[in-house]
Amino acid sequence: MVAALLAAIAMIVAIAPARAAAQKPATEGALFLLLPIGARAVGEGQSVVADEPGSEAVWWNPAAIARGQRREIAIHHSQTIIATGDAVTLVVPSALLGVLAIGANIVYYGREDITDTVGTVGVLIPQNLVYAATYATPIAKRFAAGLTYKIVQLRLDCSGGCAGVPTVSASSSALDAGVQARLAGLLPATVGVAIRNVGPRLQVNDKDQSDPLPTRVQAGVSVNVPNVGGVPPEVKLRVSGDVLSDMRFNSPSPRFGASIGYRDQAFFRTGYLFDRGDGEGDGPSLGFGISTGSLVLDIGRIVRGLSADAGKPPTYVSLRYLF
Image (cartoon, rainbow, N blue to C red; front, side, top):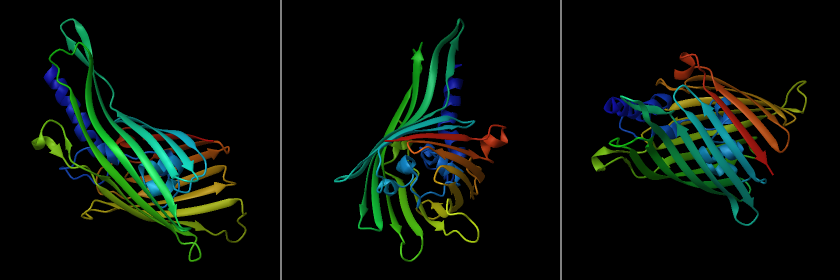
């Protein structure tokens, strides 16, 4: 019973994130690092590398927090058929030091009971954790750069009667780096490039059981569209387009997004992500946002994919407090 249970949990930890993430060569590990974080990013089809989405940027392009002027604490929650995710992030701007941020992301796959002849004696808890520290700063008027250091952990813990039940604890470290450039004077646009998950292999037991991290490059542009005709000035439209790829540019994943804002208080977002695999992100997405100045609530939903096909469309909720 225990052996079969461990095999099932290993399948959940190793394979499920792979099915839920784009760009997934079989030789890579820690594919949960490719799962999207943040309702705003999801609503815009994950086309955000040139955007400034607040604390969500820590997980996409660290350069995007460089011009932040208010402190922010946020929680980004996700719920899919595979797992529950919660990313907590704190952003602290400094007039002298640039912008600093710290965050933690937990991907939880549920609990599995360990039973014997008398009933349940213990619980197996598979989960993935990422701890992040970010520094970003503007460079002159048009440019910004950022760097994030991450500690990545894959864990299979046991609670209760766990005698003879093996557990797993694998860890690695990774770097994310990004830049943004505003094209002010030329176009009302921003371009961005980020490289994520650069680091040593994730080793479970020994060198023969290690896999490279899923290193990705994402590049894109975000354009503020001028109002035309009878469109009131309170309405703002922004469109974006990104491409995500591995380092060899195998099967690049285009993604597009749009955001319509009214008085910077209410937002409607939509996007489309092209992925040749069977990931959660393939297809259209929708999002809504409400801002009261200090409190920002965003909701995003992926319309098609593994969870949606099973009758449980992935839902993402972000709650941000600015102070």
